[in-house]
Length: 197
Ligand code: B4P
Picture (cartoon, rainbow, N blue to C red):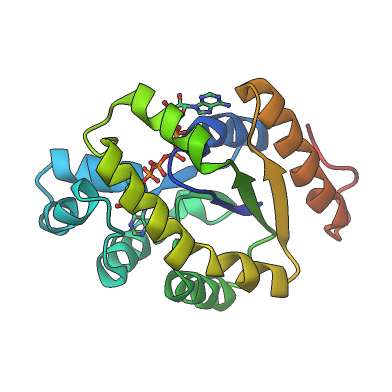
């Protein structure tokens, strides 16, 4: 299965994606983790990206698209993948769709995790990563509303958007995600019988 996970910064994408990859048994592709790991490894593109991340801006599309394009060449992503924090702009989404269409492996569901801004600020302040300072959080939230929210219309128009309430405990949120994903799995045609877990 190929799934995109969308939500504001700190909505709990990383937290829920860990559970979802185990549940669906597919690999996890988190652009945030890739960029942070690349920075640790002194990857030149990731070092360039770091100045955007630390100030709360989205990393420019060409950098992200190059990193993701390289990663998707790996054979382990051929059967399914959970995209976490990617795409974040309509341009990223269009490029991803083209790549997947060439392989005849389209996305099956785009999950939107909905959490209000006050709860996000509380969660991120408690986490305390270097881009979790109040002024940087405010900038990341503005970026989400301006650059990432238009993606929701993009996926709604494609008929694959599922919205999930991100309030409550991680367990409660995950139960809603399972329901949304299973709804989509049940719609898939194929001779292989009922869906798995
Ligand atoms: P990401 O790494 O994607 O991270 P995030 O949006 O900050 O957090 P996430 O939603 O994963 O929250 P988490 O589960 O950790 O992005 C970081 C930066 O990378 C971006 O700002 C951008 O600069 C750059 N970037 C990444 N991808 C990009 C792209 N495609 N294009 C351009 N730029 C890109 O949860 C947050 C906290 O909440 C945690 O402490 C967690 O424990 C807590 N929490 C989670 N669920 C909870 C719950 N139900 N209740 C209470 N707390 C909860």
